[in-house]
Length: 78
Image 1 (cartoon, rainbow, N blue to C red):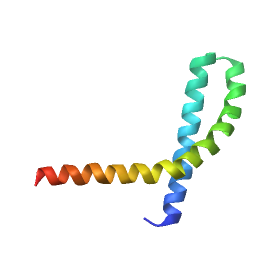
Image 2: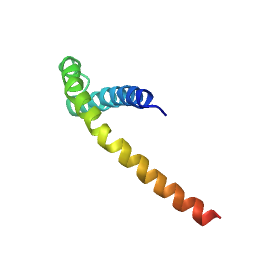
Image 3: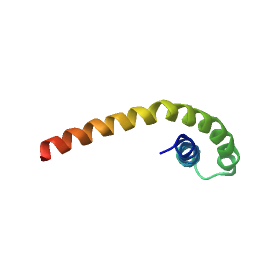
């Protein structure tokens, strides 16, 4: 995978996750009201940059952990 593909996939993934998580969590907290609908975009605008920055750290760590687990699994299957 090239770096542009990785960066773009992180942009899309964090946008989707921030939108869904901020929407669902604030909906559970406030209920389906006009106030919730008004506040959700603000929560999303706060959540997305945080999610993107965390992904820049978490994604390489997650890839390394998956590699270790799959390497260990393939060694036990041989």
